[in-house]
Image 1 (cartoon, one colour):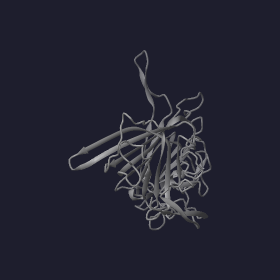
Image 2 (cartoon, rainbow, N blue to C red):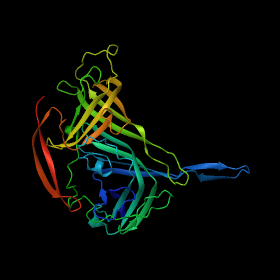
Image 3 (cartoon, rainbow, N blue to C red):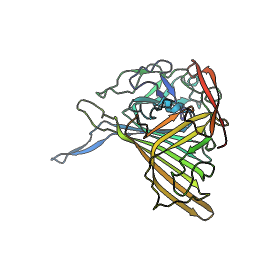
Length: 388
């Protein structure tokens, strides 16, 4: 018996057309909370003069997919093509690369660990592109990321997941023909169900936001005299071309510029600052940092640096027995991946622009074995928190 609530989500490490049979060619995404997809067949009613009609497909079917997961240290982001590094490259620079996703279901009420599978049921989504990346955090809850995208094909598989034809489509709409295998060692689970190469899920206590003092209205949102931050949502929305070309099955789905960046946050008001809408100038572009630490340490888990935002809306509300809540939203647009003024970066380690409340203490080498049995050597830097 197959239990479709025991599933694991995998993604190709290369593009959709790469060889996906070798160890490490497919990676599992961790701490997945949900995954769903739907198929739009793009049918259109066609009528004729003799009153006959048909419900015909006018375009290639489109597969919309969505999944969300608990944010950890940027590994899920890296595996789907988001750039999480120290080089100052745009977070979404590589999102024109198509990938394949695989949803694997285990049987006999066991975890979807390769040692438990034997035979399996798999949905394969081919030629996947990400259209939206969302990060949300709220007091009392874990940090969650939500990803939306589109694929061109879905195939289903049963049996031994070795050397199966991938769901990737060629330009003519036929299967490209490359193969995939979900091999022993692809799963990140160990015997007690944890992820040995990743940190625990992150909570609100692990988060800091650096917001310029004058980047709200009538309040300070970060620093020693700040109000009480309750939640934030960061959204990166990507639009794509839908231009069809003669002789090509699928549309050209290249990223369209500009890419929209939305950030919103709610605070509990504790202290007002003198301000005036009439006298103030709220047209400046400024930068905001979201810093998320590893639990119980001052090691960085992941940091988002959003550049070139402008304040768009401010609202205050109150009700009986509740304190005044302020809601703020900012918006920016990225027109150039290499822009130093308007962009979004993510990093998994502090760099020379680390926040003023931390100082470098020491760095040390760490070694271990990754999920594919390969030895790795890395460096982890410890930042000591200081009072500012």
